[in-house]
Image (cartoon, rainbow, N blue to C red; front, side, top):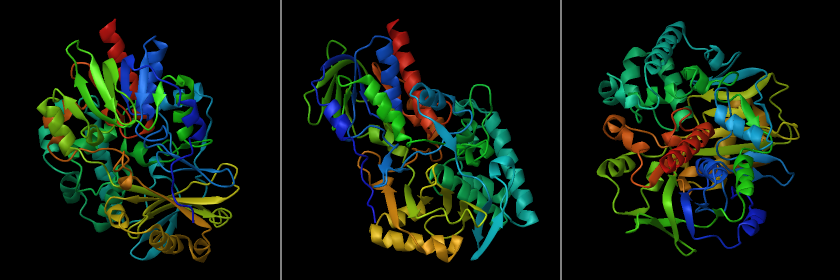
Length: 483
């Protein structure tokens, strides 16, 4: 069995080992897509920049794992879909190709110890085989969610007239009375576990609606169907060579004088000359006119700021946790489910993995079933060894696909909760009361300190596209101030 490990960056480590300028215009903390996108725009505008990345690789919550045969698994963000214009544009600029997520054949639905197959995609209006009563409730709730979300300004959802009412309750406390049928509640619970890696009792209703509103762009309203769908949805395409290519090629373009790896930032201090000193492990300090904190709010809170950040920003970072997420890739000699007329996609009410996709490479040399381990299931499995996890996962797959699923050649795991510089994934979410009280602090700059990261994006919060957008926004913010 392959253990999950950090993508090999040996060439880049050598590439970035040269001396770096310690006095720059902008210091960017975080070498994920948000930080690298900000650096790209700032460098193109003539600014001197350094990107300080705590890990020994770039990409943040975007991570490739290379198998011995050369195939690549994506252990973090994996999918790209329509209206995700900025990440698509970045892929095109970097010469990175996309290919369709495998979606031919029937879905598998596992409910009450019974396996069903059904055709269609939720994004195209098809729902799992539930009772007519549950179906009517689901359709009504989904339509109401889309309608309410369409009223929000995704850049400032806390400004809606009903924001405080919506923010005073969880998604579950609002949705459960509208969809009392157990099957309807199961589908809604699983939808939000799949999207946020939380239980539906954790995010506020306002945050849920804002997340839906953000699943679009400047000309297209967000929708729940786009979030959960494959065809026409957020899971429509994948990246040839893995999504971490977006980060590694950006880093290569920026060059050896910009990106510094193995550089955890511990302190940001404003000096008498209004410049900032950034204190970093393993390196002497950097000074900059502006600092970009391109990381999740809970991770940003672990840096010491002098002077202290405003109380609203501090309250926000204390109250905004990460989702609990892991991914497992079960590897087979071939995608045996395809001849069975199945597309590899699963929704289940039990087991450690309850949402599954066919993540086989585009050349079909091997078969790969990718399962999300989310929320409470991830919190349980975080305490187990990978050997124990593989046994549990294999039993799940046999329930979903029959005896051939027992022939796993290996499993590759990534537990984001256990990552020192992530402590969860895919995104930091807002419990009740947070957005209306502290939401504006997400991206309000403090002097020369600016905040990026997918959590701050107007569109596609929590996705790679949101990360790229946030980096571009903060770069423009700095350039506009200096103009």
